[in-house]
Image (tube, rainbow, N blue to C red; front, top):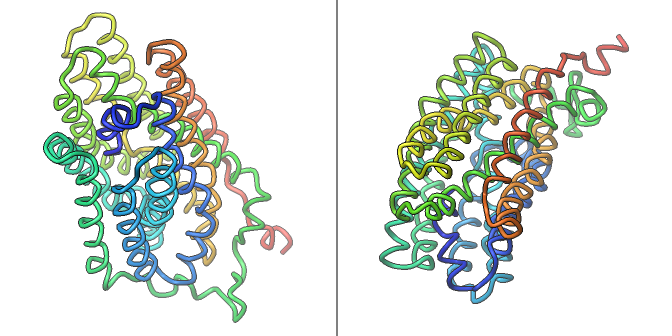
Length: 377
C-alpha cells in the first residue's frame, strides 16, 4: 500500500504518465497473483518457516536493487517482478491459510486477528514512507523497507503447521481423500470464489494506489493525504475484527455484503469531496472505506477453507489466488489510465463500485459441494 506515497515522486523523476508509473505496481500485483499456485505448492511442501524466511530475503534484495533503478523498465523488473516474487509468499494468501488450518472452529475471527498485522503495518509504513520520501527521497525509502523486511527471518524461526495438517498425504505427496487441486478446479464453488477474489482485487488496489494522488488533486497536502491513507489502515484494524465476527455469526456472504456496502459509501464520500471541496468528506471516507479494507481476503479465505480444507488446501488456495493478481494489476493500471483519458478519477471510482457489486453477487452464488471421490462413494 505504501507505493501510493512513491507514486507522484516516480512520475516526477521518470516523466511517465500515471498509467505508465502505475504499471510498476501492476507488475508486482501480477507476479503475486500468477505465482499463487507456486506459493501454495511451496507452503504445502516446505512449510511456512522456510517459505517466509527465504521470501523475506529475496524481497529485501529486490528492493535494494530497485533503489538503484535508472528507468521505469528497470523499476518494473526489480520492484515489480523480483520484489513481487518475494512478497507473494508474505502476504494474505499464506498467512490466512496458516490461520485457517490452526483454528478451524473460529476461522473468521482467527483470520481477522492474524490479518491485523496487515492493517497495522500499513498504518505504520505509509506515514513513515511519506516522511522518508520527503526528507531522503524514494531511493533511500526503499533501502529502509529492505532492512525492515529482514525482520521476517527471526520472527518466523518457530513458525510451523499444526499437527496433522499434512497427514493425509501419501509417499508421492498427493492428497489421500478429500479435495485435490484437480477436483477443486472442476467444481462450481471454486470458480464463483475465484470471481469473488477477482472483483475484490480490482476494487481495493485501485483506491489504495490512487487515493493520495486524488486527494492532492483536490488541494489536500501530500502529507495529509498520506496520513489519511494510513488512517484507512488504522480503521481497518477494527474493520478486520468486525468482519471476522460477522463471518462467524452471520455467514460469509452477508459479511462481505455489509463490508462492501461500507466501502461503496466511503467512495461516495470522495465524490462529494470532489463536488464540494470540503475536507471533512475525506474523514468520512477513511471511516467507511477503512471498515471494509481487508474484508475481501478475510471472507474469501474463510469460505475457501469451509469448502476445501485438507491436505491440499495450500495449493488450492494458491490456484484461487491466480484471480487476484490480474484483478489487482487491472485496478491499479486502470485507475491511472482512466485519469489520463478523462482528467478525473470519478470514472475509476464508478468502476470500483461496479466491481464491488459483482463480488457480492459472486459470493452469494457459492454453494458447498462434496469432493469428487466422496461423490463416487
